[in-house]
Each structure stands twice: as structure tokens, then as C-alpha cells.
Length: 281
Image (cartoon, rainbow, N blue to C red; front, side, top):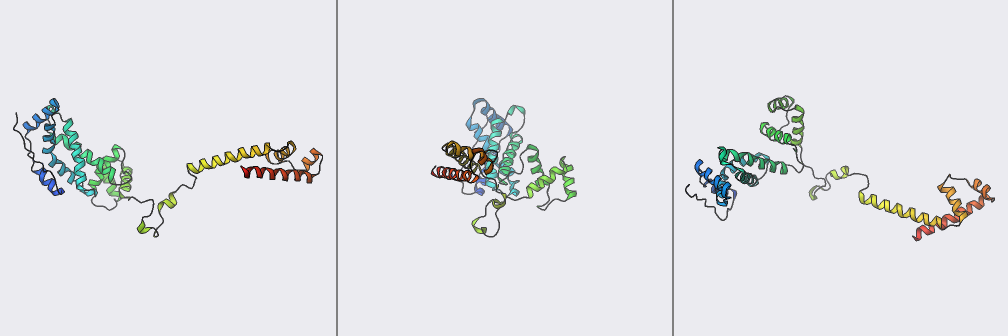
């Protein structure tokens, strides 16, 4: 049975420096202590054993997180995400495999930090597939500075990473780009044209399309009722003049045995009645 370990966690940590100093004071577990705690956790679901394993490796998270400060994200947030990875590693750690927790946990810690960086480094994700995520972090570590890669340097990095030059070039463009607000802020409202002005779809939106469809439907139904309210001759003339083969006044005059002027008068009176019905509706 291993000796009881003491992890004096202060109730409040006023700053990140205080937190780092605190976790650096936690005792480092021997191999025997680590394996016994891990066995207790797996066998008995011992919460205190899990606590001891996590606290004794918090300094590892701080060390790993420090390597990712170049992404411009808060060190405290990187540590917090790394701690999540550490807790996942402790839960999955199998002492019977003969591997120390530090070697097993570092992969989980990095994975959580990587996910956090990809979610927060840009508003728009720069890498979505597993291959793109790997290339993103490899390219960041191999770039000498923030300048744009030259052709020869891109070829060299592609060969070193075993990827296509086109993939390196595409990731370089993604990494070099900056997030742009769709709308101007209060400070530059009159200085530049916001992207929303030229990226907006000129086509009508769903609400406008629905409103237009409903309006057309109502107009069509109203027109149908108005035409049905005409007498048979007026209705036939309107249908022949506007809804059919567009018969002329003289053709209809010959058919009904009246003058073309009389057909025009009937048509005009019928149209007035239709407009009145549509307006009333």
C-alpha cells in the first residue's frame, strides 16, 4: 500500500501565476504510486485516486499549453482545455499496459488543446478534416515567421511533411487570411463599404417569395371571381380579348353582329367592373 499523498489545493487562486506555482508544488508520483492509484480507480472507481492522478500531472498540462502560446489565445484557456484532456486520459489509463501516465496523457492533452485552437483561432475554421488539422499544426511549427511562404519553401515543407504542394499552399492561404466583419462597426461606419453590401443575395428571401406567392394567389382568385360575375357576353369578350387568342375588335364585331365600337364599349365597361371588384377585395 502506498503512502498517503498530500495535495494542498488553495481555496482561491488569484492569478495564473499563483495557479502555476500551486500545481508545481504537487508531489510527483513514483511508478509504484501511480500504478496503485490507477488500479484503485479502475477496480473501485475511486474518486480520490483519480484526483491524485490528475493533480500530480497538472504541471504537465501547464508545460504543454505553454508551447501553444504563439496562437494568440489565453494561456489560462489553453491550460483549462489541456486539463480536460488530462482528465479524459486518467479515466482511460490502463496501468497493466506498462506505460506511464505521462506518456499516455500527453496525447489527450494535445488533442483537446488542438481542438480548442481550431475552434477559436478564427471565426471560420481553417481546418476541418483530420489531414488538414495535422497540416495546420505542422505548418505553424515549421514556418520561420509570419511572412508568406515562397515557392521553394512550400516545396521543401511539402516534401518534409509528405503532402502535396497544393495542400501546403491552400493551408497557407487559410492561415494568412483574417476574419472580416460582415457589417461595419460604429468606429468605421462611414469609412468603408461593409462586405454585407456586396455579398448580399439580390434575390428575394423566403419571406418575400411567400408574400409574393400569396399576393399572386389572391389576385388570381379575385380576378376569377370578378370575371365570373360578368354577364355571358361580356365574359366571353374579355376571355377572347385577354385570356385566349387575343381576338381583335373587328373579329368579335363580326361574330356578334355589332360594330367594333360597341365591342370596345362592352370591353371597357367589363374592365371597369373587374377593377372595382379587385379593389373592393
